Amino acid sequence: MREQILSIIEKNSRIDIKELAVILGIEEIDVANELKALEEEGVICGYHTMIDWEKTSIEKVTALIEVRITPQRGQGYDNIAERIYKYPEVNSVYLISGGYDLLVTLEGKSLKAVSSFVSDKLSTLDGVLSTATHFILKKYKDHGTILTKKYEDTREKVTP
Amino acid sequence: MRNPLSDKITTIKPSGIRKFFDIVNEMEDAISLGVGEPDFDTPWHIRDEGIYSLEKGRTFYTSNAGLKELRTEIVRYIQRTQGVSYDPMKEVLVTVGGSEAIDLALRAMVNPGDEVLIPQPSYVSYEPCAILADAVPVIIELKEENEFRLTARELQDAITDKTKILVLPFPNNPTGAIMEKRDLEEIAEVVKEKDLFVISDEIYAELTYKEKHVSIASLPGMKERTILINGFSKAYAMTGWRLGYACAPAVIMEQMIKIHQFAIMCAPTTSQYAAVEALKNGDDDVAQMRESYNQRRRYLMHAFQEMGLKCFEPYGAFYVFPCIKEFGMTSEEFAERLLREEKVAVVPGTAFGDCGEGFLRISYAYSLDNLKIAMEKIGHFISRLREEKK
Image (cartoon, rainbow over all chains, first blue to last red; front, side, top):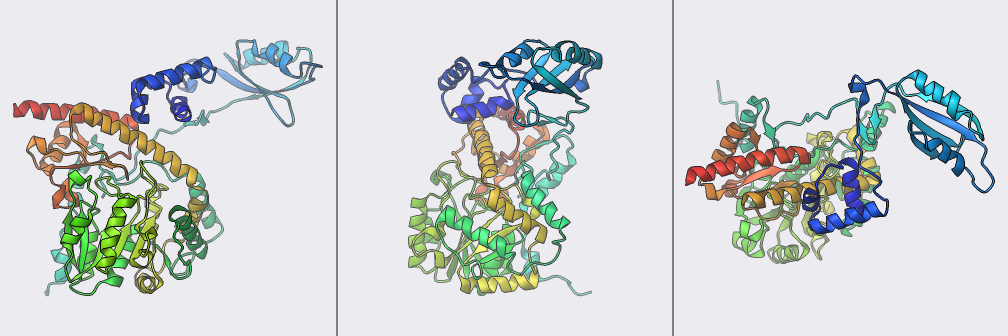
């Protein structure tokens, strides 16, 4: 049940408990209890909305920043990661295997805002060896949802 | 000028669905619940294999029976799902959709005058194919009180000295009915006792929501009497690829291949390469689609319950078959008014046999959002009908 609930609300967090109960064939109270448990355990960390900012008149710039750092004795990467994720403009921070250590995604109002964050704040942190900033030009697909095309039903309308 | 037509073909009525299709097509903004194919795209890795086969220049005929690699995968699939072993070299044929296999099986097996038992409501092609093969179709009318399953009693009552074949269309289009193992065991007893053969159309085998589908071919003594038909359309959302298959005893298969060889040559090569990938790596896709269908099925059953619309719970395919007898209209009248007044298209049960009268086929090969809008409209419509009756 857990996996099914999660896979549904991962795609549609607005679905109500009653409907979840109907489509999964379980009692409402059980769905409610499970959701509560998932929230308490921190499995469900929040309910967000996917927005294609491109389609609004609001300017936003998203950047992926590769960060190479020197791990600290006893702390590993955690301390520096924390110093980075505390900035509200930072969207996500991942520890990555391979050529660099942290992948930071960042949302800013403009290229300038992002660049100054990187040069003034990020690259000057103790332990940060280098950064490489990539700006996102276009989002084709995000969170499993294709943003560039709308679903179109091209089937014949009635078939045996 | 002489009559250019064969008498036989002119006696066959065009598919009942056709007429309805024309009305729906005039309406721009109708919401259709009338489609008999999945709403999912073919999973990308399967399409990718098709594309790759074209890039590599695999654009030639395959052997008549189909790619050996595909036949081997089919045999493995039947083995792991049904525990039945077929010889890929002699007992498997890749066809142009399951429907070609139905046609071939009938043509390979009947002599003029042989009776073919066809349970209805069921898919539209069995009866005309039987007629084209010079057989006499004998309809068994399935009953709602049996959840549209075929009972041994009904079968026995329909058998005569001329009966040769039973068509077994489960999981069923249009009713969504299934036959479970114990149901099949009773049927198999009669089949063996009366020395019949079974054409088992299992195209919806992967789409069951209770127990896993059981093929009648897996029952003792039945493999040698069964032509097992399946395909890729419904399980892997591959309707447009036109690919199905039949598994049958070599003595029957040999003749089926002969007809296929002369009439078709071979099934589309691109589709066959894609199908190998589907069987090798498609299980997760099937499971995901099945889960989505099941969620929609539960939603529809709940919606009907709230409307007070009578409907037995179907456990297969992607159709529900609600009963509309309380409104005192024919299925066709109901469907036509629903379309004109609420712009929702469903298929009258009569498109699948006379005994579909009083029922509608509603497909849930649509997104939940789509189904919600449609159910709201159907709800309005039937409360209006109930008002009128007062």
